[in-house]
Length: 250
Ligand SMILES: [Zn+2]
Image (cartoon, rainbow, N blue to C red):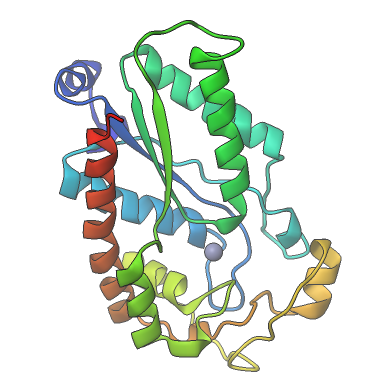
């Protein structure tokens, strides 16, 4: 159930039975030779829509550009500053809160967003009921979940990808985009098949150490069938987390 496909009357009717909403958040950044620039935003949105269907929950607009400064050495990458992202999340949440939404479940597709999203939550709490308070009595809660979270997802990655999952442009995320958009599959050689691992500082150093953009991964192992398994494992896990989040009262 996409917010953008509802009328205002339908949103008002939804709010009479639920105050929860799912917000996808991703990134627009290079993902190696066979990974789409939009991988992180695509994965977050695709999974969020599935969770929305499974949980009967509203899904809001995707925040598609994230914190990706270290990927700026590669064409097509976009980034926002942490202060920009905090402002966007703050404004999205408080807009929706004005209408009665109170439980905001972010489904994230990019590890580099996590610290900033948590800072945004702190900013929102300060505005809603804290130091600069709107002095609201009704509680507002935000939660961040990554689409790859949970034991079942880790076990699946171990089973179908093994030690070649890596940490950037991973086979699991590329597989998920292949399942979502089979027409975009790129059949290109990966040399070496498994990318080097290690640390880096900033975009120039990143590109020097990891010239094709991948870190530690072999996304040549990605297939749409594997993507479907990741999808079908993630949806019930996250739908359960969402239901738990809505029911929390402590
Ligand atoms: Zn990614």
